[in-house]
Image (cartoon, rainbow, N blue to C red; front, top):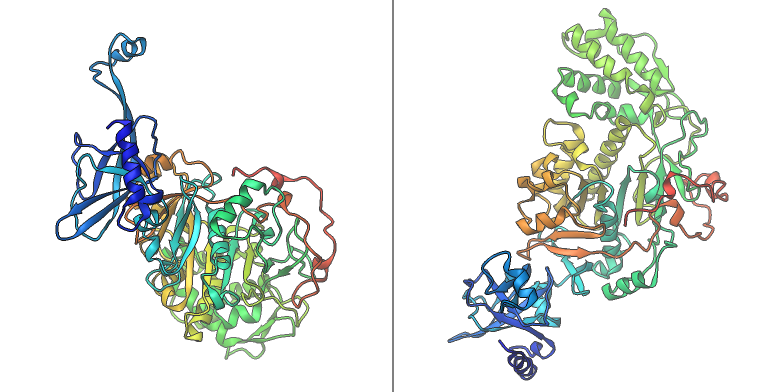
Length: 607
């Protein structure tokens, strides 16, 4: 097709079009006749001087008798350039020297995303193909039928891309799975951006104030400054937020929970960089016994495979029945029915010593175990229990001053962050399991899905592994399968989706991939990614994600903007002095004594 033909096509487009949208469209070429076109894909030969990129949206039309103009729209999935008339690889040198005549031809493969109306016929060879703009683009990507949508980033054309909120809030689906290599896939950054977009896009309307987010932070103190402006924000980043229709500002309502500092008799939060707006959390021994939290001490998949899983339940039931409050600080007095006096426990180590003594004694073992248990099983149970004394002692105790708020709650702020990075892995599992169980039970008792609770959990493969069972995995499966109806929405991130329980991933309506390891990208769990997208995911830059949602047949390549909130201490702009709040320690209202000190958290993020 000659240049004049495209000029005439552009002129015709300006005068016609089914919806008048072609008025702003740019003709880029024509449907090829040398490649077979089908209702699902076709090739476009590009006019010299015209270029299209991967992920751009292209539309063409065909007049069909009895149906009128039919729009065929799709996303560019491949772009090729070649010498036409060249027969041998060495011909390229002759052509470059002008000794052999040849033409450079560029073509693009288009994977069809929408046919409107639904008359599934191929576009005709020679039909003019346009770069989709405005309503044509919205129609091609189903944005026109998304009654409630949230911006998730910008496309290759610099225009916003949207996520249908119906597939997030439980209306038609729920949950998000984000996969990618640690450190370069920006999984957590994208998860927090999604939360920010939900809260600030207006999609929640009057529900925004009561909708909550619960974020578990396991990697340093990077997520503890979401309510601080990012000092690295520049004009380009602000422009990106403006295109998305979002304000470029930090989260406005954030509360941080951190474990007590080990050995501190006052239970001061164990954080370094942030000293304002932080509350310490722990569970009293009375709560530990009454709520049968012992099962979350044995939260590894290996524990469920061991022979002592029944013993865990028996001992937990005995503690619930025989433990009574033993003081104002949460201590307990444990007394079996056949014992004249009870034993008071003020620390987790005291409680473990009591259980050890009762199970090791032949006279009391059956009373506590509830059955004839082999000594080897009891010893294995006790070895495992003793190994968690040090990790759990700071967060399970009965020796702190009474009448002090110590529970993790999502009612204090719109975004609640639970800092776990200073806890050993066994303690992290305990906290995640107990908190999720509590929030899920609260939503069940409320009997309504509104207001929504979004749970952001990194390292999902650790908490819901593909093999084995554990109490935490049971809860996450419950969230994945029933959370939609209860308004509990999981946003899970993991390096390897292939190692996550299949039912958890399968129940995620939205699937996201950042930079992938080549071996991981070849796994069947990424079947939702076309082969070309899998290859691209292995070289994706930080900030680029591939997002699949049920309504759009192909995943979209999304670039989300640089965070407007601080992602590490060195980026945090000073915050206004907050007023004293219940549950916030006196120390947290003092000036930060660590400001200005360099540290590992001050490294520039790979973003």
